[in-house]
Image (cartoon, rainbow, N blue to C red):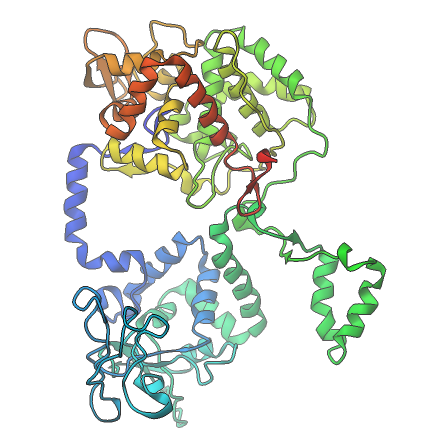
Length: 584
């Protein structure tokens, strides 16, 4: 977001020169593009140098939210099972671009692995069993030694259907010789260390595996897991749960109820204490639970740190009507207070991402670093101070609820007679700002892409996003961020009308820079200003259409704004994977 207004105020924008430079750099780095998005198991740009792969492992797993221990556990745990398949150097044959009807037919070598007819019929000809493979004969036709998937060939362990820590032991036990596998890719074969006469096991490693030996921190963890199966078990189960659950978003989106500590212990003890008769043990330990309907089903692990859990809301919520009255009193003290409170709520809530269900105002993490330190949030510490006295009056009032209610009340009071905008309480406060790091400023090539992307990320339509741009705006907060002034510098910031759209669509705007160096737009012949985000609404067709509509119809604007405001303020109030507590 490019300014403290309802634009993309916590996002930075490239200028055109920077964008061109970035595009040139991207073109020059095209060969490394694949490695930038995932770890090439053969090595950086297919060069089998393990130490060069370390940075890609740490970057790739870091983007998934994994620390070093979780990374090593996932790599080694994932390679405890299964094997790679690369039966021949010519691979699987033409892909879908060259052969849309039957891609990758397989062209494995000659003799018992000959594949003159490819992989067989594709999904168009044989929807139920496409690409069965035609290599070899008998029960292993197209399978086992006749299979081709990644092009690497071999297993990491001697028993790839057993869970254990052999992968880590193998890494440390052998020296490793670079070879080309039968699939034509670089991979590594074990060599007995000096002085060892025993023949190495028939296993293999990939360049990405050996990279774990090239980093001091990774190597420590490899040694730990090689010597302690229990350490690996614990680390892997937690990392796996994190990996497979992270895209669910907050804990409140998961189905089921959390296991209490005694139930979790019970589940662990059943097979250990009475492995021959677990039913009897279950009967003994649950008989006092009463009917089956009283038992907890679909039990979940307790909330994990990666889910950024929040404390439960107070059992008894405050009198929100009384809180609202106090907010109205605050609005009367300064004509800009309404715009300031609205902006605080907007900045608190507009971090919501419908893509991974992170962000939003629940938790009120805008009070903490890093969010409070973003350029677009300059001056909001003073706005938070305005509501501190109200917060102190109500022991069960959360900052999160107060921020949203204050902004909502300011919008309602900006219209005469006041609007009625639904408010749903029950938020709680986070203890710190953890979890907002990835929500911070982003760079975009241009404002049109920025506003379009941000709208989709927030889960809004173009019309909803444009309506939200018309909320109250504080000239003082504009100046705090570094802009020259606001579009309503000569008007009243406390009145909520469609005037923003009339000004935006009815003037000629000239690109300028503020004294602080921020890009902005000045109305020709007038001392009023818009941000790049505002200009993006005017110049992006999908956003200009609703802006024109709102400029012509104040009632439609107010109706659209009320609905969009409620949608965004409640977007993070999850109740299971698809529900919302505010819709009950």
